Every structure is written in structure tokens, then in C-alpha cells.
Image (cartoon, rainbow, N blue to C red; front, top):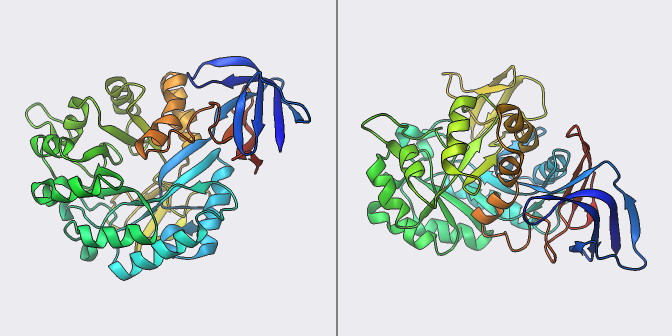
Length: 374
């Protein structure tokens, strides 16, 4: 099938807008201003075409959760994400027993390739290899040391795109070194000091999970994990940009220091996203959502109820440059999980994962691999 999106403002591979026509053929981008005969014409006058957004850290949305271990839940997430301009994602697990993780991985593997909306890259394992002291909303009884055999077994069931560890729990960085040959390894839920984090960044860890949250912060004499991320030239950092998890002032500082190639917007959303306030389950624990804020009974922040398109608009309102904001939702997450050759920008031969918006940032339509889903 061939389509030409006419008269649009197209965000090209350099993340600059060009006026013209975008041609799509056989699920992929054929090029800008390279029209082909017998194409369906789609008038995009007054509209902008962006790459589809990529959420590499999401537990749930619309009443569905990855840890439900149900096909219906994964498909519901896939469909609902498209409503927010997300065309691909990494279903994210919690700290759970091995048998539960095995079941979840099997369900995701069955859905992968058969998604009704946004497609799955691979699983994001947030836990169980974390620090008890920084467990956040993860269940303490299931926290355990990094286990490369368990990880390999799970990866054999369904590919892992990201695995989280607390560096201080990884003796001699052995897990990070081995796991980094399979997927991206991220520092997460960690009490590590700055030096420990720095050594880990030199031995397999190239990513930081929800920067500032569930990790050691920065002070004058204690740089912490966050300080080590800033000190690095290469480690990418996820940030929840809902304005609640990270104060806008702190967020602006992080975006300025990290630059436009190392920031990644994530939702870290749970099943309460797009749902009313109330009580919900997350990783075997009750979460109380009030005014859109998700908390455990003791007040611990438990995931978010946001989505990355709303967070993208938040960034613009916080004063983040448009190019920086959009790269953080598209090509940066794609690079973080090694999928930038196939998606993340509008470039010839990449998948036609497209988000079409109007001048007021309203979503008008969404295409996943050239198929209209919204």
C-alpha cells in the first residue's frame, strides 16, 4: 500500500521541519517529496508530522497492567497508547517471584508481533535486582541479588530490552558485564554512591532509570548516582516529566546538563492512567490515587498516571526547546534500546511510525508501521 501525506510540515531525520509531502510504502517511509504513482492521498494542510513516540518504561494504562499476565491487558495497553501518540513500547515488569515473571514473559511473547496498536520492542525488567533501601513501590519480599541465569532464562522466553539493577548489589559488576551483551543495563532503585555508580558505568551500565527517583541524589560532597549520571558523557537518563516526580526547576537543570541526546521521557505509568482516582494494584501492592497522584499507604510515590505525550507538552510549558523535547520522546529512547535503525525518526526505510498533530498539539491521527490506528 502506498500513501502520500500532502502539504504537511514534516519533522525530518535532523529534527527540522520541512514543508512537503511524505511518501509511505509497504509499512516504511519511502522519502520526503518523492511521490509515487497510484498512492492514496492524505491531505495534511495545516498539520505537523512527527515520529511516533516510544515509551520504554510503562507498567500499565487504562485499567490494564503488564503484571496482570493476561493477553487482554497487553492488547488494551497497546491500543490505548496509540491514543497518546505512542507507536511502540517496552512492557515493564515489577519485582516479583520467578514463576510470576515467567508467566508474564510468556504472555508478552505471545502478544509480540500480534499487537492491535503500538508494538512491543521487548520487556523492561524493573526489578527484582534492586536495593531494599531504595525499593520504592517494589515489594520487599521479592527483592533479590542479580541472577544472570534467571535473567537468561527469562530473555529466552521473551527478549529483554532493558534490565534494571542496583550497582552496589552487583559484585564486581559481573551481571552488568554479561547482561550488557544481551540488552541495555540500567541503574535503578539504588543506594550506590557516586564512585560505585561511575565504576558501573564503565562496566556495562549505560542507562539510568527515572532519574532522581529511587536513587541517591546530589549534594556538595556526595554526588550520588544522579551526580555520576551528570558527570558521564554517555549514560542516558529516563525522566518522568509529569511535574510531580521531578520539580520543573530540577527538570530544566537535568535537560540542560544532559543535552538533547541523553534525555528520555518515560511515563512509568500504572493501570490508573486514564482512569479515575481510586485504589489500584501495582506489583502486588495497593496504590491509592488521589488527584492523579499514585501513592502507597505510607506515602511512597508509586509510578505515575501520566503519558508521554502529555509530558511532552509539559516540557514545552516548562521551557524545554521543542527539538530537545521531541527527541527525548522518539530517537533517544530508540537509541537507548538499540532500535534507532528502524524507528524513532522520519527517515527513508524506517517504519512509518507517525504522529500527526495540529498547531495546538492536538493529536489528529497516528500510524503504526504505515497502518492508521487513530
